[in-house]
Length: 82
Image (cartoon, rainbow, N blue to C red; front, side, top):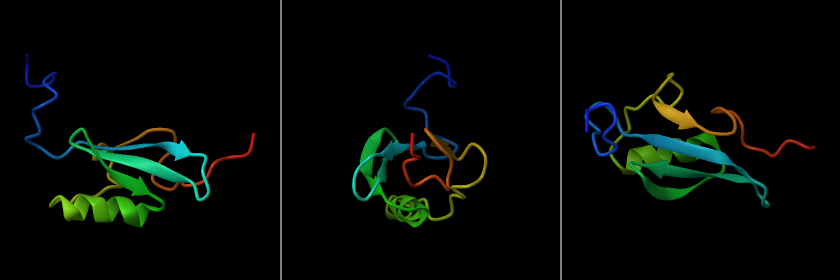
């Protein structure tokens, strides 16, 4: 596999994925780092804490490309009414 398609190649920065808001009380977003679920985030500070715990305290989670935000960006934490 080439470097760009190899999912195990993490030389530049960790792959952080924040999933869509789960419609629970309170709502949360699942967070994965390097393909492993690390927890449920209820606010942006939770994502920062998960990154810190795995040694990514210097990662700018709001910088373009540093985090994959699915179903809303860094400031989406509630479920929108239909």
